[in-house]
Image 1 (cartoon, one colour):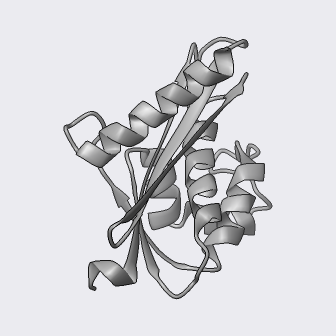
Image 2 (image 1 turned 30 degrees about the vertical axis):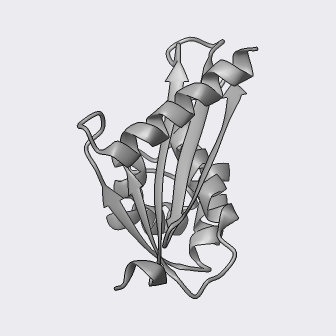
Length: 153
């Protein structure tokens, strides 16, 4: 598909002190359509890396103004890519939002937001290796870390 008919998104999340109750998280995303590019970022206190990964994807999709394009979302989050590509969410919904272990699915609020957005578009999720030199993935990571720095101010 020609580049002008696609929107390319790279998204990433990060969390500093993820293992502690008091922490800071950030998310970042880059959207490309043809020669146009937009960067977005933000942060939250007392969150998790997984929430930031989902938030980056949600916030990027919220920027898309037309459903006429195919969207390729690149993420280094196995959690995000696998849940979509392996359709874990279908089982979660069928099981009343309980996971394989019969426990409530974590981040259900964000999964529901994301799935609602995805229903509006033709989206491909592409898993990329994190911190492997992919320029746009590295930039999304940098944006997420800036989101952490800004929330801490």
